[in-house]
Length: 469
Image (cartoon, rainbow, N blue to C red):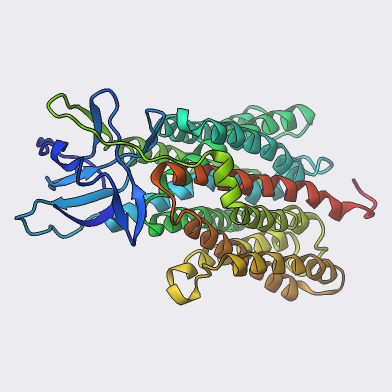
């Protein structure tokens, strides 16, 4: 039996597949580039099988831990019998597109909140909405991901991911309902209501991002890169839409509110689309088939404990923590409140956020160029620590520089943020077995969210001594 390649693809085939029983022993340890990335397990005489459209010799092997299937649409292997010619691999591009869209959906709701910050500053000028909403979001995100990471082996990742996307959809829709019900009025009651649904964003983010990264950690690195490129794309798309809606409604009565509602409506539709995509495309291929005709002696290899995985990969975890501590201590609160007044006027913070998001997206594709990708653990840490020179650079630019220098700095901040994130996330899972990669993905996301939370808290230091709290 010949293993041709790995990929994952969508399922829509009514024809019965060949019996997968004969594949089990030969494919217990599948190797990609010399690394064990997939393992099989049966549960109560049943095995998980994925059928690929019009492709009979395709089997998916789901890594399991504790008897729970931890995957959505997982890595698919095209398998040819000994006397058959290997079939050309198909569907990789579709898989990359699916990962990109799901990555987009996992952050578009939160980016919506950031990019309509100017509207919330008009409604709640004394409540520091950009800083407060981010601070509300993060404890729920980090608390939820900590619980989910600890219980990773007991949780059905498919249900976890779909629950996260549904929660994103409901909370984004609720923001529109609040605004329409109150006719766009401010007040502490409305502000608290918005904070409640922002907390829901945090819970949803922990469900989706940790679950998806855990799944993608033991697939091809291109899928992980595509997912994080989708995350970055959500930023630039939301920024672009916000600039368009602001320009379209700038001169009309209540134009800021109309633009924000339209923008939230588009974001709500995007989340609904991701629910359908995940439920009916990404995860629809998982099926269980009875297998009582063969004696299957496949064993799941021993995996390191969560603590052992953390110790082994502590430098990668710290890289992500420090990357986002630095980024979130500047973005977005500092950009809204501490950059002064310039020729661009009310457009200035929106332009800064758009530039950050644009370069953050571009940089997430740079690691696809092999010689530009950092894989050394030492150099990843050095590059991460070097970014802390941004702190004095932003301070003196805000105090003495003009808008051109600030735009250049924020572009560099986005460039380094996206690039280093993808480098760490694609390098860290190498050498891990399937269950270990899943657990490691959750650990890395937990440190990423922890860095965001710490950065948001440190962001408040910028307003010390400015005479307004």
